[in-house]
Length: 480
Image (cartoon, rainbow, N blue to C red):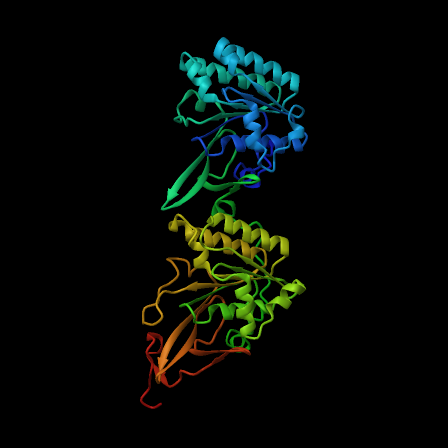
């Protein structure tokens, strides 16, 4: 099968959605309401393109001056003033459009494409061209002729418009691709989304994808479950075990956690989930580094907590055996977190990963219905990269016989499932740990008491002579 030549946008997430970039010689409409980032996106593509040896012609059909445009673009890191007037040429076709009409605009742009040897043409102000057209046929003719001249010169065209058109509009029927930028409010949060509504002759990742606008321009985050619908690598065939950090636990699960497995610890706040995870992370080494990906506690508080149970996290960090990444739950995008995590795993060659917690990551989602698919894709990709994952999920109830599973279907994604509860027995509050599931592995299902002190964590079979333990209010058996 013949592959179409591509022009990379230089925006990693956008090129991933486009499955390699823009088709060379094709035409695209970039549409969205004012403030959605159309102009930034087009110029970011333009300046990235000239860095790769291309040439760009930017034609504006707007009354706004280029000086004002440069003033705004100069605040963004991709803007290179030295390229303006050389590899990136700007012309205003507003007066030509206003006084001479669409036909003359086409002639002007055709001449400039040839003169500048442009490989990308940006036409900003398609709405003005549509208004100037007497009929829909005139609008269609304008796009057709401009497309023809550009394609003959091997030039890719980006039409910008602030007036999203219907799918059957003349503009939509003529172009090869449509990129739509939008913004939605979720409570007081604003989330930007990008969608490829049309990609003629090319595959694409369909649906809505999140993006942000910052000092470097647009950053696009493809939906993780679409980007990794299949893991990027074959599953690991290594069935060896690794130390969980708690000797008693390893003896109950056949010698340790299966390598490249996912273990989820469920329990209420204060039960010791993070302490278990820090013990797991403390077994990291320079050859097999670990990563703490946390949400609720800053790195400094995490170090203090580790020190309280006998773990010198700072020394592990200094040696390069452990890395800490923290992100507050006040803001953020779910797919941004997924991308950030996978990038860190790749760059730092992570083999042990402690996510504290999945619930903190889930809080950033604006659509809870996709959480199972998101976490499934994330965990499958981590397994494929040979990462052993230890994650936590906070349960609401401190006591009670009812167990709130972490979302429908989520417990089925993990390989190993561990429950922690508070138990009242003989007027004392105790911590309980129970292994609910170990995929493809034998394990001891005993109810264990968790002892946490300044030397670490220990597990004891302390509930042999008690009943109704999982209810939270245990009582001694009659023969205790």
